[in-house]
Length: 503
Image (cartoon, rainbow, N blue to C red):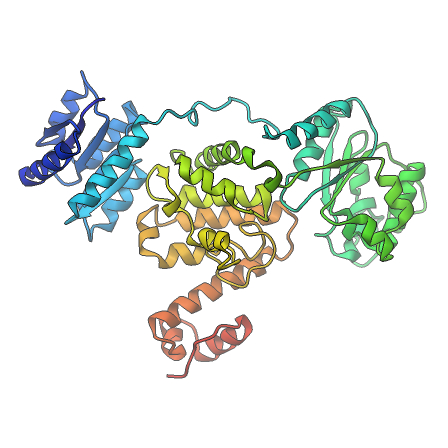
């Protein structure tokens, strides 16, 4: 094993670290300045590099930049003053493994160096992932059955009904069915029927003629026309209004439809794939779904397993999402320790793959160091596992639906804005990246009123934080936030915030 390099102009710090690491039977090599360390890199490399940030001549950040350009996988620990937040942020932006704040506890320093050493020695294939991202990841037997079904249906135009829990990847399966079908060169059009208001859904599906209703100033092609010769994917079909089910049945039966306000029948050459997380048989019995439409859609049923049924796939999904998230943010991909992967595989993850993906986005921004341990994960995950809490991680408001994927999940604006350690763990704009990813997740999932949902969470987070700093005095909080007293009183009532009091 290569030695651990210590670069610091303070001889006492070099001496203390050398002695502490020697007790751990770890070889070291010390340098009084960055220039000597840079020169030594020409003919040898360390296993781990520990460097002070402020030294005469080249700084620790200069050394970090050079090392990362030559040896991107080498863990670098930066030593910095406790109050020097800008330096800490710069260290992480430069790719540092972690930073040590002066004055530091020597035992904690050794523990951190041990973690960096384990990271350096760990063989991982994360960075050398496949050049082309697979459509769907999965090695579990349940997923292999899905792959076989896609293969059998590859040359067919038959209607397929995909069932499975929310967040399990039903649209990915629909896209794979299209990609491997004779219609692959034609359009794939997706529509979440639960996300479109009832009054607009008919026009979305079938289009409308000019003057068909107020605001219809031009003729508009619907999704059936847009998907001509291709595939139309109707997600959450179980939520389609009953009267529209009749129109959909007519199209599936004879291939003809009318635009809203139109009198000329149009022919549709479209393969229809539908999906739902609901029990359609039960909805038929309750009179909420047409039985004849159910039988027309249920020609081939493809059930997508939940993540709980394919726990062995969680490690490969985590590695994939961490690499994907790192590329989006332009940072180095984090790695999970074996213990952390086993912990994640033991969770229920009701939000399935979508929840896991959003968790990996959180890890990329918030977890300290490059190797993520169990203690680096959101505390709420441990609470959920023990049954102590079912709240979504870092939620800024009431959470419903899938953790990390429902509209109310991921109150990361609050977390990044109020947690000092989080501020040091990424750039000052890190929360914006999380906000963008959350908005993208909601928009791609067909969520309506995204601005309103996230806006309420943002306002709630700001007001709660201000009340915390003013010990519940709402007038003082209003002054701190730069809003009026009447405004904060109204917002507190609207958002259901407790703990506020008059000054």
